[in-house]
Image (cartoon, rainbow, N blue to C red; front, side, top):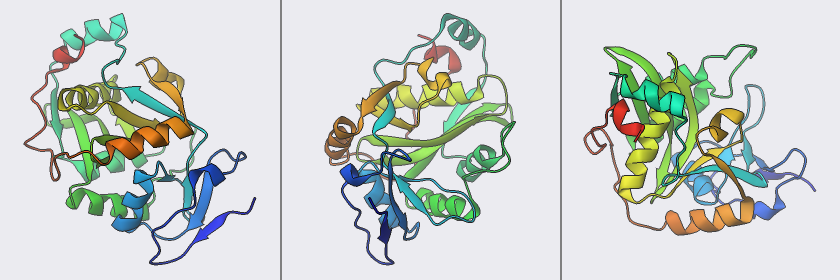
Length: 240
């Protein structure tokens, strides 16, 4: 099956069922990262993922890794650590810093998929109230964070980082706790990893995921910054 090429100004996408089996989920290429196109993609369960030197590649894998916000798993060792953690948790106070930290190459990696164009595109979504970050702070030091896109009552996690042990876990758990309290049942984590499964992630077939997304993005929700809206949470609250 041939890859569908997107054209400037056209924010439509082919049906996700047309995504390739190998590489799993590759649906389309080209287009741009304008807000209208990005939001159109996420509403359909599609996300961009590519490297410098490639065209923009759009994906909808056959299986999606998700968190049910009512069913997060807190390992006992992590729960004990959380009870003694005095970090502060905030949202939307350092969005670009979180993205830049996520973009830093990890050990055994030579580059990043969070290109300068991606950073600029999601910073624009953030300014428009569609992209958000949740941050863990140790004093004035940013020690962990996660960022992603919110539409309706659906959150699409893009990336997270740890600047200190458990930094990304604190940010993720805080995000899921807030979502649970708001009545947002599902967080998209995109691609499976052992790290995510230790916290309760599960895999969901594409058809079921896209049907759930289609319902959640239509529900009314708060638009704009989360800076004041995000609940006051202590790390100790997250282990309960």
